[in-house]
Length: 375
Image (cartoon, rainbow, N blue to C red; front, side, top):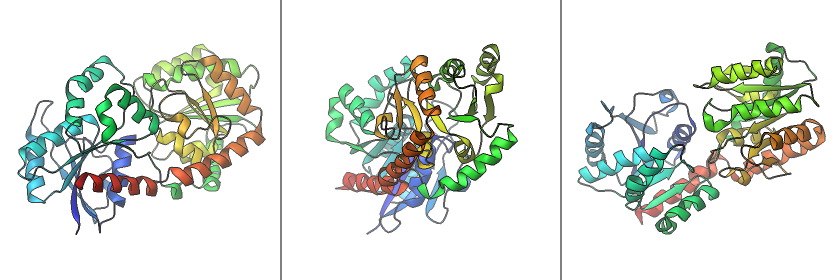
């Protein structure tokens, strides 16, 4: 018999966790689960991506931070649709989901998918300690997106070990054809006035402190002394972009950087690149990392979160200590100087994503976690 699944997500922003939920909702086996998706924030950027034939979307917009209206609306939906299990993504969604379940007559089990590892500020850490860990104790399953993240949370809260499961983030590998991306990348290079013999580095990330754009510039300032053909493509936007642009000017790197802004499709950026960088000081399991590897573009990543689970040091890319611009510069020089190494790493990276990190694998493991919560 088909079970009814309610997925709870704050919004449909174009961001990592939101992308994953839309992929899951569209691909979960309709013979096993009827899928309903409940959102409560105003952003609906990805609404058109939802397959309306398979996913019923309910938008219970909240009027303010302390508005309980969405939880009451969710409770009504749980009872009216005969929901058998509630799957929440991100901690704030767990709060709304838990309240909705408590206010419902059916009281279905809860599953939560956690996408953070190291909190970015003290307030989030205290919310975890004072509120969210207690809500997670009410969950039948706690889903983590990589093994390193799971180990981190279990060390902080040992009770989680009995109900934790790892479901790695996955991507639709069929969308990431290396040859097509390289062709689009060549067009991007021409449009940006980048010389044919340039060594191009991609950094795909929002301009936020943890993404360490300034560290990339510091490493580039060192690396261009040896490899003057280096050019960095920054794809993304955010509050720090103006400051990073000014930093590049002050370092005399204006000719070596391009600021591309937010793009609906980053495949041409990665297709234009010889390698990519992700030097974050806080990270969990990056989709940009998987997309780079799927396009046979090796990556230099900082040793944060689950980077080592996909960027196999010396095989699919290089791992560097977080916050170390000298190590990042050395890694950029090592990959920039060896085209054969980049090709070998790129081929191994794509093979790894195909074998372990496809969206189909993510869906199958998510379905298994949801089914286990019903047992």
